[in-house]
Length: 239
Length: 320
Image 1 (tube, rainbow over the protein chains, first blue to last red):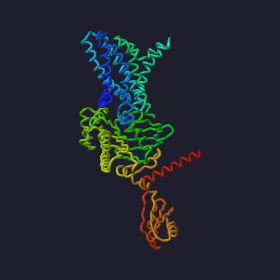
Image 2: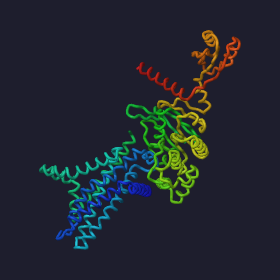
Image 3: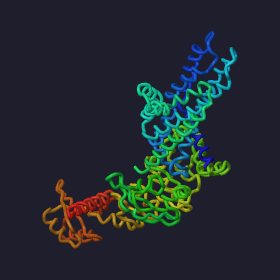
Image 4: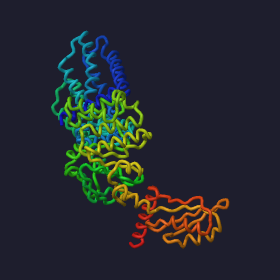
């Protein structure tokens, strides 16, 4: 099983790095974060923290990761490769996990390249490295959840663009929309709405707090969307 | 090796495959013949575990396709109709990936890729990106993938569609070569194709098996729809009357052109009154310039079968 997931992960990674969109997304992400870092964080008398940049990344990634995952499952159906894949001795769950790990490894490479900013910050002042490490841990958990939502959206349609829009909509719903609703609603609703708010959980990490509850939230919701994705693929066989 | 019992697949209200049953023994090479939309691909997809049946069952190598799907997938090599491939990879990279998910070790993969590359004449194309390959070349890569793990059962959906005549001949030879070591089920909508390669043919139309047997047996059945063509000069009405009275003649139609009359003669089953018609013409001193048996084609056979099915359905509706 591990061997098969590894083979599927390598296949997805190859597909990502051979696709044009991954480079566009990667370059744009680094360009925008680089600009934000230079003009916002790297200012005289500014605070030596990555926190504002982490918060910017959390919304930038809502746009970036769905563009990486959008073709992953929808294109298998559109091009028909799902037929050779699903008649080989691999389970639906292995296929989904392979795609998830492929996306995640690409994401890790992207996030690791932002460590340059931390180095730049450390050259001029003394940032809190532990808090920064927690911030990166939060980013990894956040990216995993975004990737699983992206894959779930991709499993729902044959059209890549619809998959991307759908994933962005779901992610925006569970961050900005519930945030707005929590603001206008009072009482019992507020705590429920803020519990399902992804960015609310991420904020602890970007502040540099190690939050076990948030880890449970991210891991379980990532697993939940991957599970949904497997179920969608299974149900497609019956149609 | 392959056992299919009452297999049915319905997409909503539309029944694509309607309770078909057949079995294929080890080492057999069987052709699945039918017009487009007959249910060939759907049946193959159920046997290869791509989609579950609505009802009925199928097993391959003693394993049920639904409950022991993984075991079935291990013994099958499948070439889908559209030959889907990972087009961004090179053929060798693709085959290597396919070997990995089939659990072949590094050395097994190297040996297997070499074997299938030779078998399917991939040659130098093995190191080309797949999106650069022609349709025929892609078909070979797909076939190479199906053969990679040396499967007991090969299922090939329209393996020669879109190939040029030379490639078709080569592919047929290859399939016959493969049939010595594998059990083969292939589908086609062309009769000569199946005639040339298969020991046994199953004809499927409208989701049901309408005939099965050796190519010779089927040829006889298909040619039940044969007719005679005769071209004569003389008094058309008299000739028609005389021909109609010949033993074995069922129906006569006539076309006239420049003093020649062309008679299209429907005969009874297994009757061949060509000799009698020739004698009749020579006795009456009618000149004759053509007399031949026009063999029924597969297309006509399909049309007849489909018409019969439609009539049966209508009759059933009227009854209910």
